[in-house]
Length: 168
Image (cartoon, rainbow, N blue to C red; front, side, top):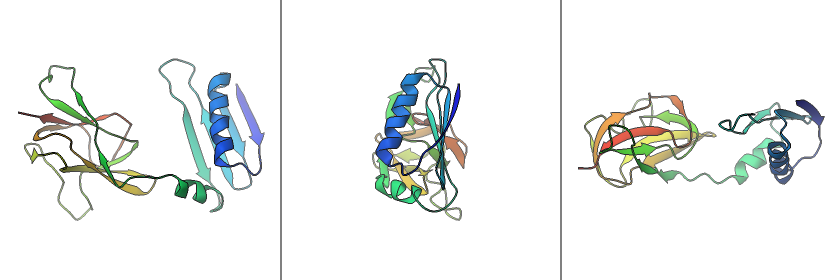
């Protein structure tokens, strides 16, 4: 079911409440338009699908204050989980956010780590760009990089495996 609504003067609380309402309603897609902002909320009908919200700014007006209210830490400790495959002795470093994965701090700089690199807690592993903010991802464990699971400049999802670490 698709709905097209025209709303004026929406604030962030109203948008959050609308997202919750759409998720509970069972609607597959809702589109909202104001003079300068379009919001599309899509929900999947199966249990594995997740809710997606897309903001498209047509003119630099109301979206800017919303982005400034969100606090993005500049250094994030990557979550660590044990791998469940035949690589059970390795520790998996996962992405703490959605964004774009970069192996270098800048295009003209060397990569943070390579396969075989020794790391310790606090070592920079990569950078993930989210909403024009570059977040340096640090390790919580010490060990050796066994495998890099993501290509440079690739989009990553929350909790996506990035690195395999041999903690021994």
